[in-house]
Length: 171
Image (cartoon, rainbow, N blue to C red; front, side):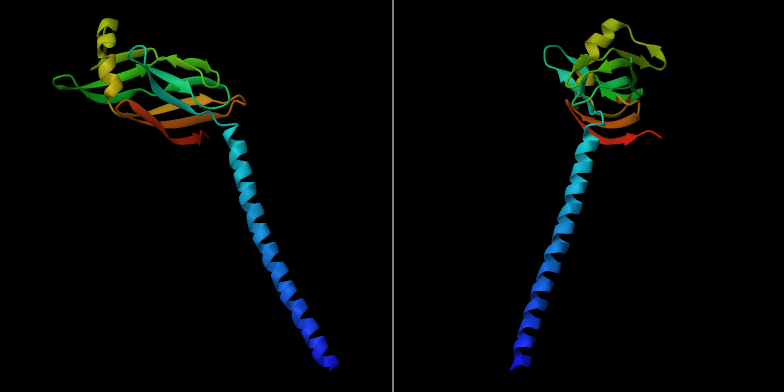
């Protein structure tokens, strides 16, 4: 009889031990997931989120800091795009650099347009703003965060909408 009682107690303890080990394994998994989420949130506080948008008050492209940190030394690589203005024309768009953008700040971009290495006059650039706003292209924005870490942000502009495709630290 004592052997049977000992067997039941041992079996009960084994089941309880297996149950506790399962709980510990699940808790470790949850802790690992929470650490990963925490790391992602901490990274968001260090990464600049820059994007292009259209100024609704006038037809011009703006750069906006959608993040919560200051972005410095902002430059956009030249963009070659084909526009349709009754006929197809390939143009080179050049953007003047922006020194700094505060969080959630937006500034109009100073744009120069070139056709076959010849700059178009400002009056033509102003007339073409609507065409540029509706055109599609990829843009590469370079900037630094407050710590001086350089980033490259790849933007995809399709018509009037623009989205962040990728953000990478420049090594």
